[in-house]
Length: 75
Image 1 (cartoon, rainbow, N blue to C red):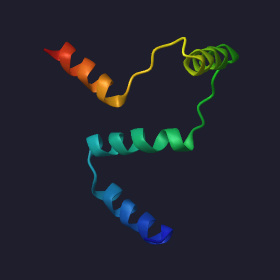
Image 2: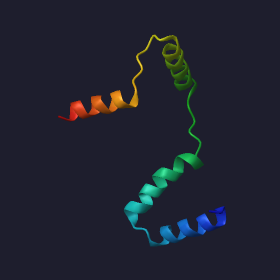
Image 3: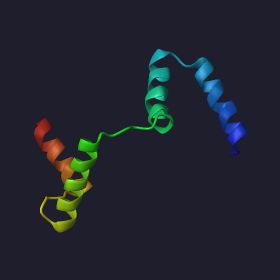
Image 4: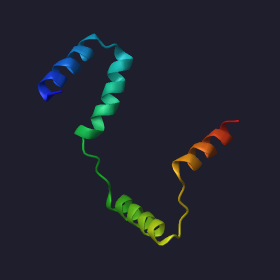
């Protein structure tokens, strides 16, 4: 679909949406519009974690492993 047609269609949905739907839309759209600003400390921590990951010093998990851990803790 072309952008204009999509905008028109989404606008129509928004006009009919209730509070819960509008909150969900805002939650989805806000991060792409508002840039997330990280502090120097946060960037340094992410760099450290990336370095540890790439060097094998930290454990990595596949998505399947993560799902299994979550499922096993819910029981």
